[in-house]
Amino acid sequence: MLDLRRLREDPEAARAALARRGAAEALDELLELDARRRELLPRVEEGRAERNRVSDQIAQAKRSGEDASEAIAQMRELGGEIKRLEKELAEVEERRDELAATLPNLPHPDAPDGGPDDAVTLREVGERPTFDFPVRDHLDLGTAHGWINTEKAAEASGTRFAYLLGDLVLVELALIRFAVERLRAEGFEPVVPPVLVREGPLFGTGFFPGEREMIYEIPRDELFLVGTSEVSLAALHADEILDAESLPRRYAGISTCFRREAGAAGKDTRGIFRVHQFDKVEMFSFVHPDESDAEHERLLAIEEGILQALEIPYRVVDIAVGDLGAPAARKFDCEAWIPSQERYREVTSCSNTTDYQARRLRARFRPEREAPPQPVHTLNGTAVAVGRTLIALLENHQRPDGSVELPKALVDAGAPAVIGAS
Image (cartoon, rainbow, N blue to C red):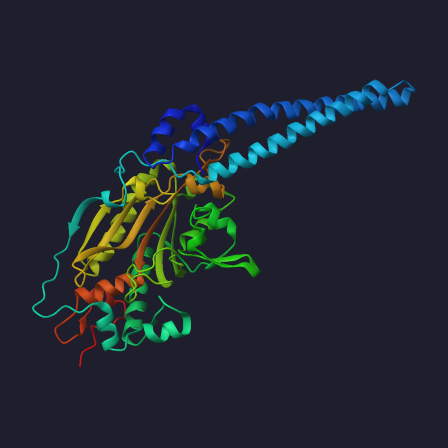
């Protein structure tokens, strides 16, 4: 949710910022509705005060035996006018709030302009592997060794589900343990959050109303399956006022995630790259507004450190404003090299949502003892998206006989040194 006061004080700057996202048209209507509300509100309050005054006059007249017919007529006329104003005020507020909920965050000044094809590559890290044997993709490797079974999963659950079995499960568990231990050393508190939430946290994080078609819904219980533990972690401090001294608050969520992937038919349907259910370790930070840019760089550095420890070649891209989700002011993606596709593919992302989510969630802090509370800034980042990281591990570390040699970081976390050896 954008700060209406900020929009009123500098509408031209807000209009220019939203124009970068193709969302400036709604701003004028929002400001008009906000101005009309500020006109109506004092008139309603004055009318109610006048109604109370006239009511007292009527009561006094009746007590003293005087004629109160004129005051009663005035009360009727005043009541009708107040009712009309209250109705218009309610309609204006409803429309204003609906419109405000659809506006995206103001983009960071340093975020590149453009759309999905205009992300800026900041750096490439790691040496891409070269193979003197035919490269096999993750599904070929996984089915050959019985690690991945999509056919039986399709029978049980439909397309875009998979069974992971055997050694690959041990790799997943080691990967989660490695990530969580690394994050804990960085000051993130491990959390196993709920994966079923009410509508409020999804609205608060900005996934509703815009991304509702991507979320699995359970109408009978009025609950939703989260597509990321960002939703549950953000709700951890909803409607709270935190002490400034307690910031930053950092959490590492370990959860299964669910996405309908509506509209993605025909895209990356082979294997486990784009599935409806996957496991993830997610970073989430509540920070002082002055620290959010630095925290964003911190999350990115952690993501890069994990990929480096896993010996996965990757690149970092700065996402263009036209490709940002509604809550994000800026987003960096880490894209792993996938040998079978001979291209980089997204495996992690981290976003600075500034005060956008915090305003919707009423997550605030008090800068000084007697000062009014202010919204915190919230940030999120993927430490490990398990499925996609498994793809990168299998393909980059494959050997001629179809076995996979795993990096020391995972072996130290409990994974076998080699999987699939005959």
